[in-house]
Length: 406
Image 1 (tube, rainbow, N blue to C red):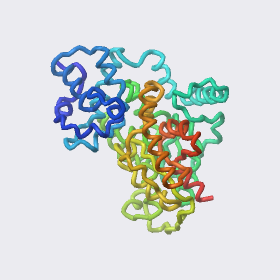
Image 2: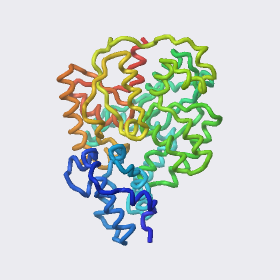
Image 3: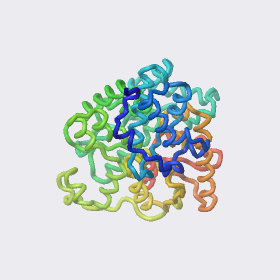
Image 4: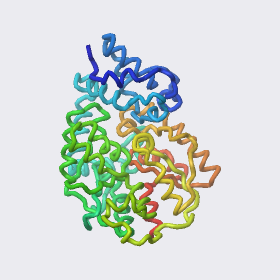
């Protein structure tokens, strides 16, 4: 009898080789097998195949996974651990073993953008009044978001999302400036809303599916959809798998990480650009970014940019045009942000972040770098709150490129 609703072929694909262990952040900080991908899969098999009870220990093992998916590229068997965890959490949430009411209210707010903006401003004010505990790992949230970007044409769509727009709207403005400088017009839907990524992570699959369908409706046609948030981009690229329809798969195929798109536009690869802009050869290649004038710049790879989208190399190519890219040398090990993970599991998230901060500080001392780029709002918030005291700023690659333009 199936208890967790997991695909049998996916569940049986793990051969327990252990190659995933060094790439799992919770295993790295606890040293416990149960907190590794292999250990969690063993627990899933015990429930689904042997009828083991879904007890508190099982729930803990599943809830403490960051869902960074760093285990996936390291796995020689290609185990789709993200799918296994999403199916398991969906079952647990449906049984009300996880995601209590107060959390469900919070996730509901993500789909109500005006309410999210108001709530974000309240949190920002509370931060200024020292009412938000630092252990939650929140960086400074802006009290005012500034002007929203407006459409300039129809070359591409620009996805703005929920938290990204509420907390880092300036990055959307930077992205718009860069596209404009490259002669590329963009359109912004009246309401692109939430992509459902955090709902999927929490196991709220029905709510996530509803948000995905709403997002699909907001982007008609077949033009490319640029996304500057790593987590959102990964979620939108997975809509086809999540909804399982031809329409959803066609939508996912249109989603492009903004760094990949901009890099292709800069080098004017006609094979890539012609389907997008109809005739890329008609647009002269004018270098907009050049020289290492910004000095050494450390690069933090958001997990869903590196492990899921596999689009992290474009960030290095772009940063190399304005500065000197500096690797952290930890193979993209998770920082512990994990969407809402840092707020829901602050102790484990803090331990994972401490390891990352130690690496960043060592590299900064060696290279003299005082800037770290990260292409995900959760990572930026989680890291900036700890790095500010060390004089290291965390910026989005698009914001750094926009500075170079000026």
